[in-house]
Length: 242
Image (cartoon, rainbow, N blue to C red; front, side, top):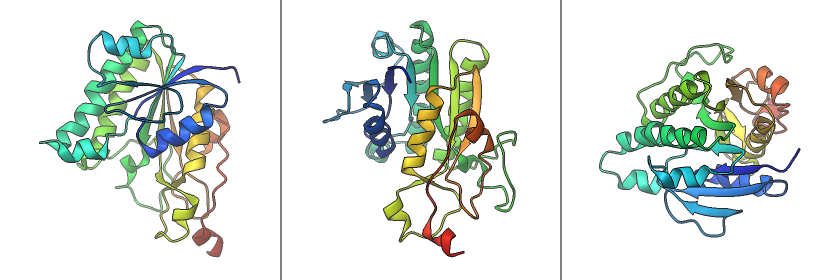
């Protein structure tokens, strides 16, 4: 894999930190967050992802944007209207980011969505990417659903290639050992591997379901295994005992 210049958003999130920790070995990273971050694995630029020249400068000379798009919990808690804050970040800020990216000639963006878009479906159904989401009114789920719409329009209009990764519920191996079993688990290292695979798989608009694969796991990941070479390694102890 050639060295890429990669911008990673939501640099303060655990997922972004894990992705950056792995990608820094082979790529040149720029990280951004709504608030200051220390000890980032790359060049850090604080940005509100506004509709102004600063966002263009943020994405300039970038090959790929990994838009983790995680609303900072502390800022969310302080917001007068938390639900609106979450939706604004996933829609307006994502729009500004992709508009700047398309203007600056960035070729590919990867958007982190969620498999919780399907949590209202029966757990015994095998849900693939061709199924229509049924988002709840939960602000996290609804905002990610609207974020997908924002990304999709950029991809379909040919402004920038967008890969959408719908992630399962993130967990570490250590935490899973004592946590209540969850059929939507996505182990952190498996999540990072999915982003690595997505770097090399670019098309105008593609969606992949990403979760760890084990007995009782809820979602079909065949498309990700084929296109992203995604081979999850995590098997929870609860599944081994089943």
